[in-house]
Image 1 (cartoon, helix red, strand yellow):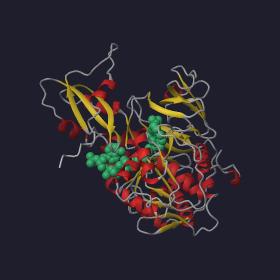
Image 2 (cartoon, rainbow, N blue to C red):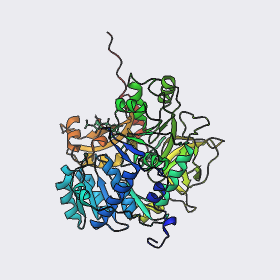
Image 3 (tube, rainbow, N blue to C red):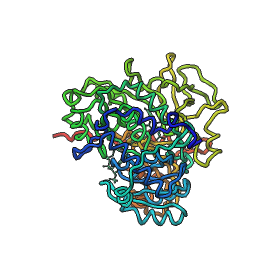
Amino acid sequence: MSGIIALNHNENLYAILKSHFPADDSACCMELSDGSQLTFGDVDARSGRMAGLLRALGVDVGDRVLVQVDKSPEAVMLYLGCLRAGAVFLPLNAAYTAREVEYFIGDATPSLAVCRPADATAFEALAAAGGGTRVQTLGANGDGTLMDRFADAPDDERVESRSHDDLAAILYTSGTTGRSKGAMLSHGNLSSNARVLHAHWGFTPDDVLIHALPIFHVHGLFVALHCSLLNGTRMIFQARFDADAVIDAMARATVLMGVPTFYVRLLENTRFDRHAVRRMRLFVAGSAPLLPDTFNAFEARTGHRILERYGMTEAGMITSNPLDGERLPGTVGYFLPGVSGRVADVDGNELPRGEVGVLEIKGPNVFRGYWCMPEKTAAEFRADGHFITGDNATMAADGRISIVGRAKDLVISGGYNVYPKEIELMIDVLPGVRESAVIGVPHPDFGEGVVAVISKQSSTALDEATVIDSLSGQLAAFKRPKRVFFTDELPRNTMGKVQKNTLRQKYADTFAKRQEEPG
Ligand code: MLC
Ligand code: AMP
């Protein structure tokens, strides 16, 4: 398809975003923490130059570019450059260890991997073992070999022609069986979702977005970035979430997108009050359930009702509470325009309104399948094309949806997904362990905190610290259990299955906020 489509029909996501850039290319696109700015003209020139550099580095249309770097404006240029070059952007959580990255390089066979300068040696070794992957580095301050070459690279205005179905990105999402799956997202998946969100959330030429999310997941990379670029207005770009920096930025901003932990931490900050939010028009939450307590406390403190929406890697955003209608805590609102679906039983039959079942969906946002896993892809789609989300939901008579749990064994901690199976497999091979169960229990900051419950051999001296230490270096820190408990036997049902619900109840208070010590 590429190359034969007339430029004005180019469905490359970058071409669509660029068509919404302001006529005045000196307008600010990204305001950086040091007070400097990148204009829309800068973003266009730099992403074009980056695309040219990728081509010069041997990246062909359709090649994967695997990226594990810190958040920086240069990393955004690398993303946009990949889109422009027709390459497939493959971002990885910056917290993943070399052991975790090895799998992604082997599975995705990228032609180029970009890592932090400090990780170059490890990446070179992984790339040499995989064969064919070249390595460049990009540091948090715009340093590294990629940027050295960028400094000498010529301008390049090209935007590769891409069709709706051509791949733009692969985002890995862990599986309940332990093996991560690469969700293939097309230019059309991303542009359709971006357009819908931009309209649905009522963006105006006066909007200024605070961008404090990581840029290796759907929320920060697609939802936040695309809405702001489509709007052609300024974003205040922050390397990480810091409640004070976000509160400072609110004096010049109108929209914040965040995971529930952002809102919990803002509420803990005594500077956060009605005055701090005087310019803000919209607070969006998602990636994990927003507790009604947080919603209510936020409204009491600021007068704003947080707009909760629901989505996932495979489909971008799926539902949203309304901008103008009622935003109800504990619900994720209605299907976005163009998205449809049902709450279904295990066979995919639609259930009566109000009953709990698995949410199944259809729409232009739904991904193209899992990279090199046709069977897994087939298993998650119904014959009529509905994608099985794995989330348990109810739908009210008026179509309002509530997520009431997960059919998949998944913990969401601070907006990051943690798959218990992956951790259990690692714990089970430790000396002295008979078996383990990893669960998520309420955590005041992260929503859910990871806990491991281990049945150990009576002869072993295995303790909590040893278990946690032995996982470091192997597992990203956010996945590591924050507490480990030992028990004689794991509770099982009559089928022999570990009863995680019983464990979740037993350890529910593990992270309960400590009562104030009496004075
Ligand atoms: C950091 N840590 C976490 C953690 N984040 N532990 C559990 N869960 C998390 N989410 C650990 C670190 O490993 C470290 O441990 C310690 O906490 C302090 O690290 P930090 O780097 O200082 O943490 P902080 O910067 O405060 O990060 C917290 C956070 C961050 C909530 C700001 O996790 C975050 O930005 N989350 C957003 C995730 C996100 O974007 N999700 C979107 C997915 S897309 P130690 O042991 O080293 O001290 C998706 C689809 C959709 O789900 O619908 O949007
Ligand atoms: P990910 O695979 O990282 O994209 O995570 C997607 C998962 O996050 C979904 O399948 C849901 O389980 C969960 N999720 C996202 N948004 C919400 C929300 N608003 N409420 C409850 N769960 C959510």
